[in-house]
Length: 425
Image (tube, rainbow, N blue to C red):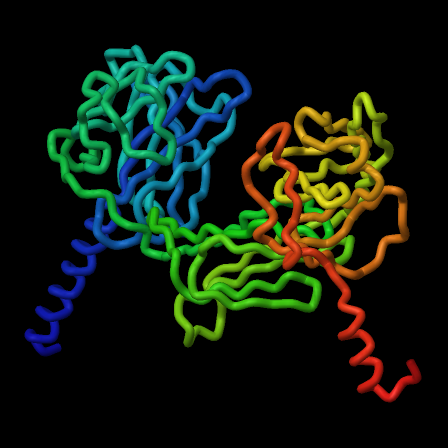
């Protein structure tokens, strides 16, 4: 065989072995709990100190009790799998890790990648004690290249020295104790390799039919980023959909009671065909069963309002009209389920003469209740919005609408309209 070919093969084999050992050395045991609190499992945390993800298929964790004794059998704790980019934690069960003179091994196939030995035995054969056994609920953690016991567990998080709270938790120092317990390699915490985007609908779950309510969303990533722009496609479940380019809050109303599936699809760009993330909530729309159940007398001209539904009703922005005057319900006023409330004339400013004809309109200017009781219609109240004040003014806050705001029917116009229509007058 050609000598050049033989040399090339040797170089390839040596390079492969070097790469294999380097890849194995990049994953180390980083923290573990061998004596957890009652009801919790023992666990071992691994950390990838390299720059590239490592496939743990074929890797395993082992346990060696009392390594100071001869002819000890190493027991397999767990077969590993998954891709480790930074930190992975594996639960190993209960009563698997002894607390006095035990050893945890990390193997890549049959090759030992890392080991940590702990306990109170100072005469361990072949292995040096890395740390004493931790007390209940505490962990053993690799900090600044050396093992330390009795640490507050930082499961799935960078290890922090309890004696040095100023240590930068974003910079973690690890070592491969199998190679050299005094050597360490520092690295800065890496961003997740796979970007994950999640979006969440922010909305009340129970709303009132015909009443606008606020909807918004929150879209963020596993890299602690928040996306406020993109293509937000809303489907309200009642035949209506909307497309927006940001996550700003907006209002929507359902006309009829029922249960509706509200969905949101987030697209990073206007050209995206498949959404990066979606969310869905069920909105329960209930009827506004509000009634004017009674009024007072000349000495106490109160107005009593009754909520006959099983859900509370937000009266914010609603208007109570008595005769020619009106009263604005204050922001945040809630009428509890199956409860009544009396509005004092000291608050509304109404007199007995004002109570012959009363109506309540919601924030969408729809009539929801009348007194005396009249059949409800689908006709909206067209009271001018400039008559509705956001401020509550006791005693004299009732207002006499100006003629231009009143609902006046001009008989001359009505006659002209009838003449033009060809009808007999």
